[in-house]
Image (cartoon, rainbow, N blue to C red; front, top):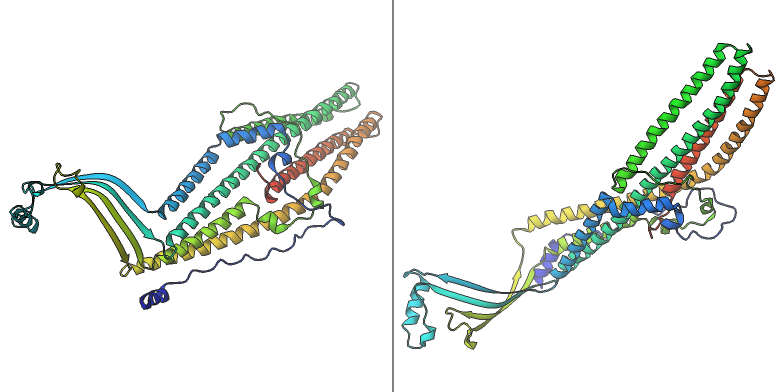
Length: 470
């Protein structure tokens, strides 16, 4: 007992897991009266576009990064199963055959020669002194008694690493889905932008026909015609450039879905903002700790402490038990006789002495890894809180911006009609007509830009709220 007490005093202590900093309340505008509690969201109820859901399924079955992550989960599961088996006794069944030739001046050689001269042995007990065979067939077992919890903590570490890898797979899947969703809505936004330019170009062509007709009768100069031609070419060039961007986004989606190009089936609507979320009471801690990035770091922290405990247990004596049982004989003729049955029991206690320095280094590494794991966990909690707060704030701002920009487009639509009528009746010049059309186009493009930014914000909101994948 005194020896164990001395060892215990010399063994370093494992740091306890620290608590993360308390998360504050969300600094977002609160509704006068909350419309119930936020109860969570899932993928198919949040993203309802059928074409997008088909692409999600393609990502799960074909994306190479997702397949690699699945294999890492399988590897972690194999490590977990191995750690469980380490706590059980090992059992080997087999047979051994060997032959030895001993020199005449060795203890074995003299002993065998002398044994054969003894009158106390029978003929089948005589030893072949030229080549002495040895036959063995049976079972051997060994077992390390886990008195100090080394194997138990290794198992706990493996289990938490497996759980962390599962959450890591969910995180990768969430990131892939948000990347795909952003690209998908990028494509829809480009379609809408293309249509805006095409519609405005067609509207400009009608104005251009009016200008050409008035030039023929001398009401405007060639300068007006050239101004309209220049603007037409500018818009045509933009139309072609948008087509290039569409090809680029299609290629990116095909790469993530693991296919060789092809058409991307898509709808015509961007993701509508779920403004009702702003009227819900959100349990910040529950939302943050449902996110796979935070949960994965939590399990990694638990695993690192278990590793540190296992490294600490290595300082204590190791207790091993062993046993073997089977048939053992130096002649084939007597091998299967009952008298050839043999067995062995073995117990051992090994105390680390000269390798304590190595054990200290390994424990120091494990302790530092635990500190790193905690810092990563705290970092993920802080990042998740700030991301959620930022996205909720932006959601409220976009709500107001989109209403204002929508009204602006309506005003400028009316302005086009007024400017055309004024131009025809001679109360406006062609510069005013051109500027009215450019302002309308710019307002429509700006509205689409804010709708697109709001959509990307909505995609990130799914991840920030810890959206479930099923």
